[in-house]
View 1 (cartoon, helix red, strand yellow):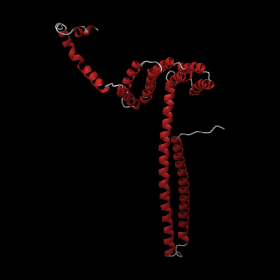
View 2 (cartoon, rainbow, N blue to C red; view 1 turned 120 degrees about the horizontal axis):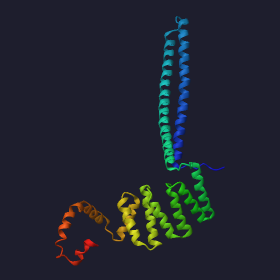
View 3 (cartoon, rainbow, N blue to C red; view 1 turned 180 degrees about the vertical axis):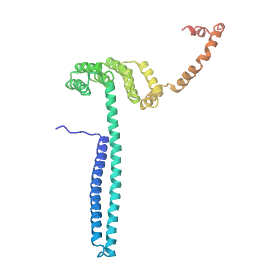
View 4 (cartoon, helix red, strand yellow; view 1 turned 45 degrees about the vertical axis):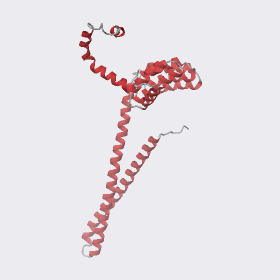
Amino acid sequence: MAKLILTRSQKIQAAVYTVLILGTCIFGILFKINYDRYMDSNGASSQSDVELEETVNEKTHAGMDSRAAGQVRYLFIYGGFLVAFSISLGLTGGRWLSNVLAQKVVDTLHSSDDATPFLKKADYEKAEEAWTRGDFLVAIELFREYLIENPNEVHASLRIAEIYEKDIGNYLASAMEYEEALKHRLPDEQWGWTAIHLCNLYISKLDRPADALQLMKRIALEYEFTAAAAKARQHLERLGETLDEKQELLKEESEEEPRKEPAKKKKRKSNKNLPASEQFREYD
């Protein structure tokens, strides 16, 4: 039999639900038992008060009153715990249910019309099974078929890139797959680390340091709050690139560009006094 493997968060959630369910059941049962006792004692005391009103002394009345007060106190205690556990269970269960429904909606929106999640999972597992057998080209073909049916499943494209790189050794094809994956909208951290991996391919396997440098600058500028951007900035500092200064210059040029348009038209008439390299810069 296959073992049920749970993550740490799933184990914590299971423990919380177990405690809330058990607490609700236990305090519900205790409240029911004490409520029945309280109602029975009140019914019995009302009948006995009529028959034994003349024979019961003050001590007996005091004992019955204290007993009734104790039952009421336990009713409030058990009832309070029952309400607390019930509300906590309702809120926690409602949050879990909302997350499940939201994930279902996301899966439905990103899935194709003719493919259910079960079929999608089966198709993906077929490709993984082919990779496990060592049929790398067959696995790539199956992953591509999966991508045709599910174009938003970018992780399949990343698996193709990994197979090309690690199993087949076709680094150019791997780099092309990573480039296609980066065209999709990925989470910032995933995009950044995928781009970092592509930079490593450019430098170590494809001898394309210029492309790696350009991509590192893009990571540092467009995804500056990610760990991948910090890694890219470290590489750029080692290479002596002053990224911050260039970024400020680009901002200043973008802000001053509309103001310089009329000035450029006036300078064209009086550019004879400039060096030759400056005279032809406008026509490059």
